[in-house]
Each structure stands twice: as structure tokens, then as C-alpha cells.
Amino acid sequence: MNPPQTTRRSRSKYVAVFAVAAVIVLVLDQGTKAWAKQALSGGNIIEVIPHLLSFVLVRNPGASLGFASGHTWLISILAFVACVLLAYASAQTDSHEWAVLLGTAFGGAAGNLIDRVVYAEHVLDGRVVDFIDYGWSVGNVADIFLTIAGIGVCALVLRGVAFRSGLDGRKPIPSSSWSEDDSEDSEVNGQGSGAR
Image 1: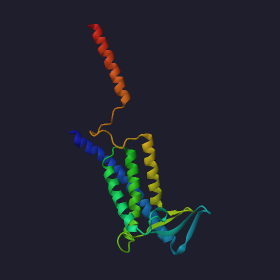
Image 2: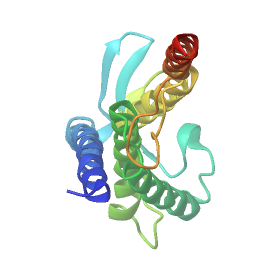
Image 3: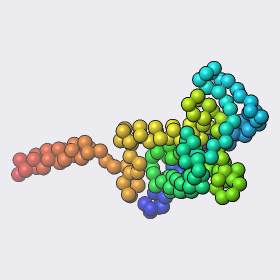
Image 4: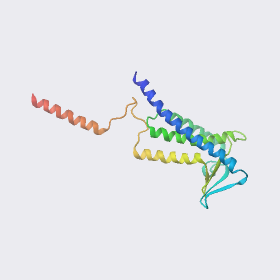
């Protein structure tokens, strides 16, 4: 089997990790939204932690914190572009950690995008189903996973976790290994010169 075929097959497992993460997030997001629409309809409010956390049904036309509420269609287009880029990135990485975070972000973005498409009155102007009231903002499960993905990406960058290894699909050899090999070669060459 030639190297390109091996690389493609090995990369497919990271795409699978991405897909599993995305599906899990989508199921959790859409499932909780379906529950919220049924349990919180008619203005019902469920207090989880008094004065701190409650469940209340809100239809949000904008982004987080109601930002750009008058440009729902633009937010929808940006979310679609983000999903396409995340899916493309999943085919480029060979890191399980990056694949999980990319899938998590995709699931969150797609979850809110689904709302904007399904509940649209015109074109991409649907309102997102929010129901988790933090007191200062109301969000949903998709927002939580988007936040987790953002924090996770920052953590991977700070830890220096590579998004992709060498173009040939092989993991890069640490520089320390090269130094050790060079030292060994120098010793061998030195001994050989002495023998002459």
C-alpha cells in the first residue's frame, strides 16, 4: 500500500471522531430544545438554583447576548460558512484532540443554524431556542459546547498540540532525538578515525 493511501485511511479515523463529537452535540442540543419547547411553553419557568439559574423559553433572533438581532440572516450565513470550514479542517487534522474540538464546535454551530432555518419566516431569519437563564444571559446547550470548544482550542494552542503532523503523514521527530543521533554519529566517526 502506497503512502498516500495509508495517509488517507489514517485521516479518515479523525474525520470519524469529528463526526461522532458533532452528532453527540447535535442530539443533546436539539433534544434539550425539544424538551424546553414542551415543558416551558406558556411562560413556565423552572428554577434550578434560586436567583442564579433557571429554565425559561426565549426565542433569540441574534447571536450570543442578543448581539446583531436585526441581522439574523447574516448570522446564519456566517454560521454556515463556519460549519463548512470546520468540516474541511476535520479532514486536515491528524490529532484526536483537535478532531473532538472541531466536532464539538461544528455541533454547536449547526445546532443553532438548524433553528434559524427551521423556524424562519422568510430566509434564514429564524430565532434560536434559548432556555438556560443565567441571570445575565439566556443560552442553550449549543452555546455551552461552543464555549467549551473555544476554551479547548486555546488550551491546545497553549500546550503546543500540533493540528497536523508532517505532510507525508508521519509524526515529526523531536529535535532532541536528532541531537542524540548526531552525537552518536560523531562518536562513531571519531572512533573510526582513531582506528586508522
